[in-house]
Structures are given as C-alpha cells and as structure tokens.
Image (cartoon, rainbow, N blue to C red; front, side, top):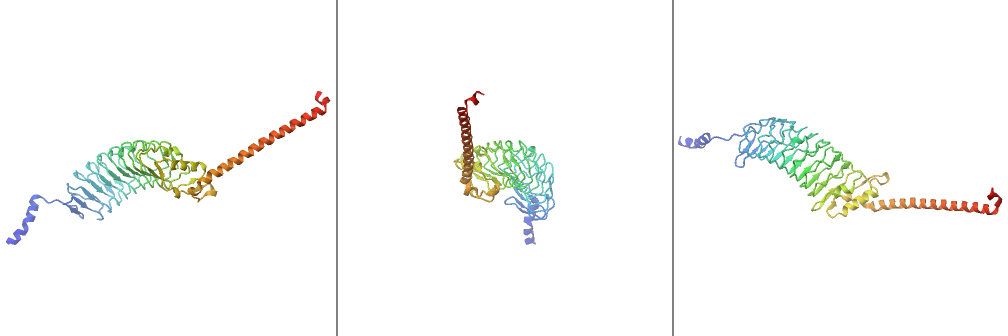
Length: 350
C-alpha cells in the first residue's frame, strides 16, 4: 500500500499544479517548447497548443485553411511551419495573435491570394516563405506592415505583374526571390525602397524588358539572377545603375540573345566595370540571327563587330566609287560639250 501511494504522488502533484496539454496526434517537447505535428494526416489545426510554445510544425498534413481562432494566445510563438499542405485560404485575423512571429513558412500550398489583413500583426516577421503556391496578384496592403522583413520568397507562383508600392514598406529586405513566375517587365517603380537588397532572383520568368531605372535603387546588390527569361537585347545603362560598393554578380544565360555588334559592346562595357561580373558569360548562347543560332557569344564576340565593320566598309567603298564614277562621267560630258563647241562656232551662236 505504501509503495502504491508513493507511486501516485507524482501524478497527484501534476494534477494539483496543472498538466500542460498537447494536441491530439502531436508530440510536445516541453523542455524546448516545441510542438511537432508534421505528417499526422491533420485536416484542421488542432486546439490545446501550449501557450509557451515557440515553434510549431504542421508541415506535410492535409490542411486546407487556417481558421481565425487557430493561434489565439500563442504570444511566445517565433516559428510557424505550414508547408506541404493544401491550404487555399487564410481566414481573416488568422495570424493576428502572432505579434512576435519571426519565421512563417506557407510554401507548397494552394494559396491564390493573401487576405488584406495578412501582415496586420506580423511586424516582427523576418522571413516569409510563400514559394510554390498559386498566387497571381499581391495587394500592397497585404505587405504594408512587414517593415522588419529580411527574406521574402515568392518563387514558383503565377505572378504576372507587381503593383507600384507593393514593396515600399519592406525597406530592410535583404533577399527577394521571384523566380519561376510570369513577369514580363522589370519596371522602374518596383524596387524603389530596396537599397539594402543583397540577392534578387528573377530567373525563369517571361522578362523581355528591364526599364532603364529599374535597378538603380539597388546599392547593396551582390547577386542578380536573370537566367531563363526572354531577353534579346539589353541597354548597358540598365546595369550601370547598379553602383554597389562591392561586386555584383549577374546571371544572364538561357535567354534568346540576338548576337550583333551592339550586344558585344554592351557585354564588353559590363566586363570593364570593376564592380560588375557576368558569372555565366561563357554559357551565353546566341538565338539570332539564324546563321549564329547555337553559337557562344564569348567565342565569337569580336567577329560580330568585325563583320559589321566589314559590311560598313564595303558600303562606304561602294558609295565612294559610285560618287567618283558620277564625277568622272560628269567631267567627261562637260569635256565633250566643250570640244563640240570649239569645233563648231556657228552651232555655239545658235
């Protein structure tokens, strides 16, 4: 009897002091304040998450939405992982309790839009992962309170355009990934407040135009990825605006470049700018004109201007010869008339 009573004492103390609950089908590590709910076939975010939790992992479940009351009271939460679900909607105020959240992972879901109040209480957020969703459009108000954000990953969505002012409140952003979307143009207004941006991934979009002042605000950029777009030509002044204090590496291969003397001059100028480095210059392949398709720009760039110079020289010589011939012919005709006049004075009088 005494032995049984001693064994019951710990349970008695727990019941008196209160037992911290743990959500069904999840594992709670109270010593480190972690809640592991990944790969549990969950269809809803469960209740009874301990209030002192700082990391919750709901990845690889079957969640379809984040309900408004899901995280109420979780003031200590710093990391929330919701990747690899089927989340289509975030209900209003679903994240409003997470004022100290620093990392939010919503990647590999089915989000088509973000609610207008998405960033309302996320002023402490440092990293936001939204890659591999179905986002088509982002409203500026959905991002306007992410003033401390350092890393934003929007890659592999279906974004075609980005509104003016969308990133205006993200002045501390260091990393921006827009790879694998459907952007057509890098517009002047897009990056006006991103002076601290260090990495910008724009590869594998449909970009055929970079406006002249689009990159000018980027004073800290270390890497600009533009691989796999639709660039045929580019103006040197676009990259000249990147007046960074350290080297900026450019990735420009896998574009349908039209190789001519002008393109050779642009790349030649870029490579003579101390702080600009074309990282994949030897991988740049010509897609036009037809006779140069498949040729490496690096292996033949000097020939492009030589051919153009030869063509100009031929045209110039042809024009000069034509002028000389015209002058000779005119002189000959003038001499012929003079001879005729001298031999027939009566004809001259008439």
